[in-house]
Image 1 (tube, helix red, strand yellow):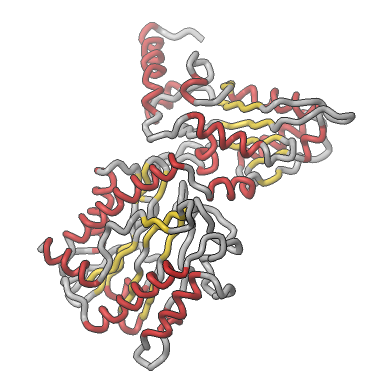
Image 2 (cartoon, rainbow, N blue to C red; image 1 turned 120 degrees about the vertical axis):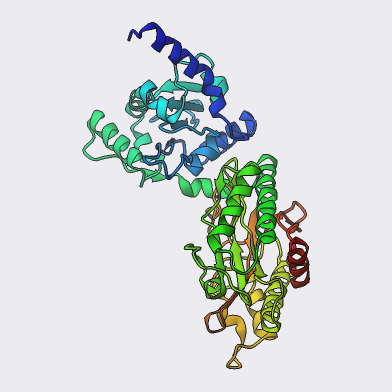
Amino acid sequence: MKFPKFSRLAALLLLAAAPTLLALDRQPAADYHARRVHLSESLNQGVAVLFAAEQSETDFTPYRQDSDFYYLTGWNQPGAALLLVAPSAADALHPARSYREILFLPARNLREERYTGPKLDAAAPDAPRLTGIDEVQPMTELPTILGKLLSSDRYLALNLFSQPDNPQARAFAAWTGTTLGMDTTPALQDVRPLLTPLRAIKDPGELDLLRKASDASVKAQLAMIAAIHPGITERAEAGIIVQSLMANGCERPSYAPIVGSGPNSTILHYSENSRTMQSGDVLLVDAAGEYSMYASDITRTMPVDGHFTARQREIYNIVLGAQRVAIEAFVAGKSRINDPYRRYSDSLDTAAFNSMNAHGKDLHGEPLGKYFIHGIGHLVGIDVHDPWDYSKPIDKGMLFTIEPGIYIPEEKIGVRIEDIFYVKSDGTLNCLTCALPKTAEAIESLMHKSQ
């Protein structure tokens, strides 16, 4: 295609700007390559095709890459696809194949890029270096290359891994079946269960990003705490958190901030953030940020007027005590979490529940454990709720939250205390968020200093 002189210049400028699109703190290319190779070893000599997230259609939802795709590539542009070919030895039925990885990039749309920013395509001579992937091809080559692979070995159609609920993956599977003259669309094996155990173990580069997310989140909570006073709205406090997160390098909150005062503190995923805070309220704030695609997760509970009432302090200390009991009960490779129905005697949920029941009563003289109505934690990583099979224990190299809570609607008291913990190689826990004060006395002192 021929462009007028000005358009050719604009296209060259856009191409030159493409490297700036990699604004996130990416890990070394070798780290992503090792993950791809590791995944290929689980493909049963098959093939995996993963698709990037599509560009958002509205300005209200800025682009965020698909978590699995980002874990494998560190690539943060829409419309791409990744092909992994597992190595296999030749036998009587199947040809030999070497490991192969290809990133397919869509054709550039220069008009659209004036709205969304410059993109990289496969024609760029340094595309493999910029992407860190062995081969970079135009997206139009994906059906051709995959078709050749499947036609040379029909066994691969039984080991074709992707994201079965992804519309691009479904369309690609249907087209592949049609072009190969198959009676039915190839059944896509779900690649995500293979990725779950890989994503659960954090490498040093990931841990560094998670620390940066947590450090920024601690600063945001401190900024929010400094502004608490009767008469301020929950939404204003949420705004302070978001502003601080952005100022400290986060690209977005890792989830919608939960800022619940008084009766709203007892609503687990309260997100309206519309109430005006009053003296005598407790304020529960569950808010944190995402730094270069890696999330943090913190909850603290404060008295709006700077002083806990005796009852609020009692409930607060019971929750804090339950967290300490859960921390002390943790045994790497044995302890389970996210067990709200306490099916496992060795779960941290059970330890926290028993602690609550042993240390307090409600207004009717009943133990407080029944007001702990959610799981005690979850894995954290690229997603604030990273995938995991919670029938399995937490082990070395994993990162998870411990977040006991008591929510008593009739008393308008909700208390949750949440921190993130990394399981070190010796099985002990390292807290990423405990720089944020959490004893009742430290919270009150912090609020008094800010007034």
